[in-house]
Length: 167
Image (cartoon, rainbow, N blue to C red; front, top):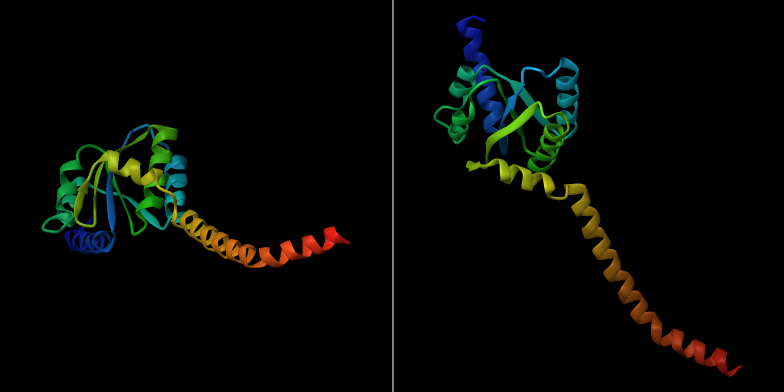
């Protein structure tokens, strides 16, 4: 790669990373297959997340002098960066893959300008997704509405039962 290509690549990566709410550094083992990485990338795209394997020096240059600079401490060995605006979905995908294959380990990350540890990423993975939260809210709203309808309907239903019992 020529210097000019590297500069444009680094500026593109810097822009993508800075537009993301979470960036996670991952250590990938040498035994990971192309099929496994392809499946992982597909799962990441399904959660609106990205996964890039970068040279550590290019990644350090991309995060230098930005809010993402603390992640450069994690860039040792065979690393990759995952980034997204959907922290919970991405954390779930990474944690699931790391648990299933054991060929990727989470090193740390940066979320909204603050450093996050492996434990925080695992806690994010245990949170319910946005769809689950929306379903719970809708369930709570419809349950309240149905309780109101039952409460309003009950006195007239009691009168109808008394009248039916007298006949």
